[in-house]
Image (tube, rainbow, N blue to C red; front, side):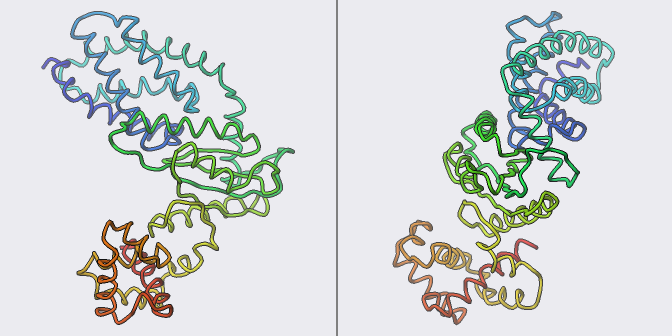
Length: 375
């Protein structure tokens, strides 16, 4: 079977397999947000692969104009903070994935792959190095490696380190699907570029967010101010969490605490903002398994068949018991919310508008959400 006719319709599938293989075998790619890795980079890989197949079908070399975009994309990896060896290694790895997925004439295709890689890789390396020269690469890379070492608990010898740090973890906000994968890539780069302007803050990225080490005694930065910078770049609040490490050796434990707080805030669908343990102390305590948590979750068991009532209660609690705000959040009339709160009282026996009952229902709501999240 003609390999071009076989592979061209599968270019998207093959590109996704290429990037999955690269993420598995090249650790640097795992530091990129999933939205970038699974979106923009897959689209780039598909376009390059289709260009390769086109040159095979037409029995020619790629033109300089056709190579302009792949070369530019290679240079962008410098802005993403990827080392050159990771940028170049992706090409033979991707070729190997395509080779394994061919059922037709592998030998002929393999020879053309080598020719194509010989055209692309030197130009990508040249463009990458040119882009890197325009960035403060060494400083950025040094900060990222230092942050990674501190988070892993590895000993470091640096006189300029602070005595204690706030460890801040955050997730970038999800973007509308209409924005395309490019929007996620641009947002990631914008956040990274802005944080480069905070020289006393150590930064590393992973998945759809990052980890910031903010000196506690810094005269220019704080956990709140750095989180606010990220919010401004994103154009909307991000969900973030912070925990204090009194000494460098405490950074791994503080990171674990912040990750747990962030997960709790997101699982409970709390409004996007910066959280510390004190902000979610009750929720954190309720997240621990035990008979009290199970008993509280059972308070809302009679509402299982009435999800709109659970949503009404959640909105009422989240809005700090403000009927107007809760009704707006639910996109219903205030009188409709009042009716639903009455139904909750009728079914559960607890009145969300009475302080004592409201506290119990809020705790029950937290326990209910946690139990459901844990499956």
